[in-house]
Image 1 (tube, rainbow, N blue to C red):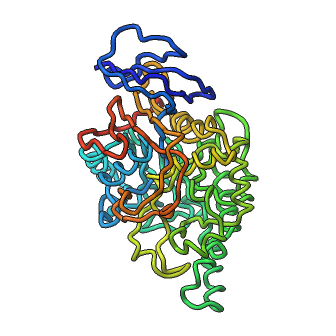
Image 2: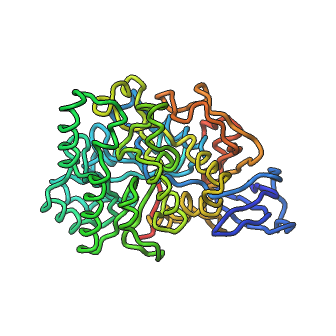
Image 3: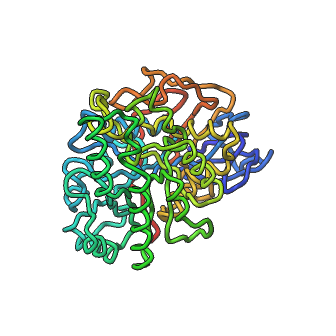
Length: 443
C-alpha cells in the first residue's frame, strides 16, 4: 500500500522544509518538496499540515531488564513505551539475568525481541575479564561491546589494567563504556559513611560518585582507545571535566560521547524535590555541569543523546545515596524533554535530529535508518508543536509505573510513530500487531 504523508514540516540532515513523503513496502519511496505531487496515486493520505516530521529516534542506551528482571520491565512493555516516545530503534544493555556475556544468552535475547518488540532492536555484548575470545564470533546484528569501567552487577566490572588492555586489543566492534573509577567511589563512600551513617542522604550521591571518579575513568578509556586505535563511545557523560577531554571535529571521530536527557534536564538542586527518583549512575551533578553538557551538544563535543532508560520499582528507589537503586525510566518522554529544550532555545530542532536520529545511525553504521532518505526504512515520527502534553501516571507504559517527569507539561506532543512503514503509535494508541526488526550494520 502506498501512503502519502502530506504537507508536514520536514526536519532532516540540517534542513527544515515543507514537503511530503511516500511510503511503500516499508520504505520511503519519494521525498517531495513544497507542493510537489507524488508520481502515482496513493492508497492512503495522511494530512500533516502544521505537524513536524522527523526520522525515528535511535536510542543507543537502554536497559529493558529481560530476561530475569521482568518484574521491573520487559522487552514488550518498554518497546511499547519507546514507540509512544517516538523511538523507533534501540540498543539494549547486557546487565540482565543471565547477563548477555555468552553467545547463548545473546541468541535468546534476539529471539525474545523478534517475538515481542514493537520497534527495531539490537543488543550489546557484555565484556568480562574472561570472554574477549568470543568477540570475533559475534553476529553482525550486534551493535557493540559494552564495558563497565565502574561498578556493575555480576562479573561485568572490569578495572584491572591488563584485562582492559586485552578487551581493547581484541574488540572488533565499537566499545561503549561506562566510566567511573570504583576505587575512588569506594573511598568516598567510606569517608562519608563515617560522618553520615550507613545510608547517607541522596544529596551525597554526586559526592560519592564524584566528578574525579568519572574523569579518571574516562581519561583512562580514551588513552586505551587511542593506544589500540579502537572506536570508543563514552556513555552518559556527566561532568565539565570529561567534556574537556572530547574533540569537536570530524564525522569519523575515534572517540565519541553520549549524554542523557536526565543530565541535560536535572541538576543537584533537584534532589531536594525529586530525591532518589533522579538517582542514577553516574550521578546528576551541578547546574554548571548541566550547562557545559548543553553547550557540548551544540559545539559537537557530545555526539549522541541516549536515555540510559533503567526502570526500577519505586520500592527499589527507597533509601538514600547507597541503598536506593540507581536508574530511572525515561524512554517514553525523552524526545519531548529535548523538544522542551528546543523551545527554550538551548538547542535547535535540527541539532536534536542530528543527536537523536542521525548520529546514532552514523556512528554505529546502522543500515538504512536514522535519516529521511529515498530507499531508507520508513522509521518516522510526526510531532505536534501546538498541542501540550502533561505526563500523568496513568499514561506511563513502563511496568515500573512512574517517571521523574510526572506532572511536567511539555509543549510538544507525539502524534504518530512509524516503524518499517507501519504506524505503531497513533495519538495515544499502540498498534500491538506491529513488530520491529533486528538492526543490521554496514561494517
